[in-house]
Length: 106
Image (tube, rainbow, N blue to C red; front, side, top):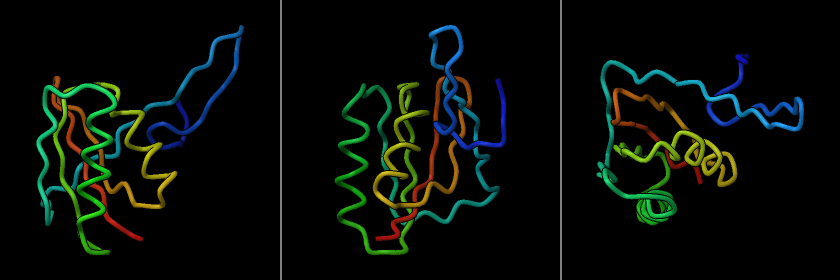
């Protein structure tokens, strides 16, 4: 099932199964991140905890670039940015490596 939703958005209930729409938001060619965070090898909930800590220590308007290998971040990061009001600029999976950009907006 595909739609125009972003990663982690869009739920449908069919035959008592919940389907979550996961689509990539493609990384820009040139990344201007202010902080880089390596979350590779860490499992849920540690990537979200570390992202939250890093964002809290950044000024509004700054961009965090993180890499992770836990596929759970494909759903967790978009949900976290939506719930915190921060902006998910991009998220992309390349093999086992997931890279994402978050802009602190609050």
